[in-house]
Length: 486
Image (cartoon, rainbow, N blue to C red; front, side):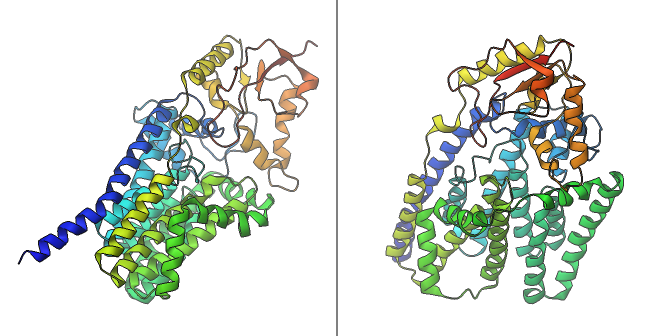
């Protein structure tokens, strides 16, 4: 009579190392993210440019305008600026904290969805919590983008939620969520192909047609509306401009797969062992996650191969690797349900989490960073007139000036044969006309006639290692230029 309670107690004890380590890892994530969210300057050099987009939304200004010295949009769909700018329009202060909280909440949603997916496929909450923690452990492998003013976290939360909704047969919700993901990063549309295939083969034509109606329909309506409202520039920015960029095949075929496989090496090993021992995926749920996971890995590698593709594009693939490896452990547990394997798999997850820890000093900004940023803003605020700061465009706004362009947006359109290559030359024309009272640059060169028409002036640059971004391109203010006398 007492054997079953005793066995259940042993099973709970077997799961304890994994659950305890997952809770501890969540604490590490929080200790990392909390000071970063409150930091008032760039953690990654494109954050300020994204805030410029959100600012335009909050002011009711269009995003997809012709490139000029006033503004050049990024080559992304508008959902993230819509969300951040919309929250600002509702009264929340527009700045780094607001944009980062949107990303943090979205990533936590993605982690929660992963736990729910594991439970739905029979893994139980303990293994689901372990899987969610494994995804959070890929914070360094994703370029530390979980909490940035960038659209990656929002996209991940929307994609994960859309997939889970479809898997749960809530195709209307899944279709609308996938549309929102598509409007965050348009490559998300390809997940709809996997969903349609799975629904058609496993749930019937009725649900497949309903999903198509609630995903393809809204996406088409939104695309037409954005295109008409921007005189066709929306599609030019998100499709035409990237089509002129180089593609680095080595990063697609080798670098990205290696990065995703080695992000959680112990779990990758477990996944390979499970694949060799179990050989086939026969359940409907297993086939669903296999198809959608393969698409996530493909798109992650594809975007890594795109010129300028950084580690952030691996986030969907890392989410899938976390889910796949956790489901693989569940399949092994189901095949061999004894306590020894339960203990071994729980300990394996706990060891992977332990070995994935990072040093806070690597990612958390210091008081010296804040002081250096404040000193730069004070110098900019003392300048009479407008300022161009393409590496740190939000500093211009913090100094009380009108924001203008982010350098990466200019680089994106400044390609021979590109649809906006001619318009990209307007920046050089503005420099020649000495449009700005000052130009703030990094140590890298802006070129475009800056040396000919401007000269360096006194500038107290940051000292030591202060004010460098914590991920991505590590650039900080280095020189301040003023117009040369005629």
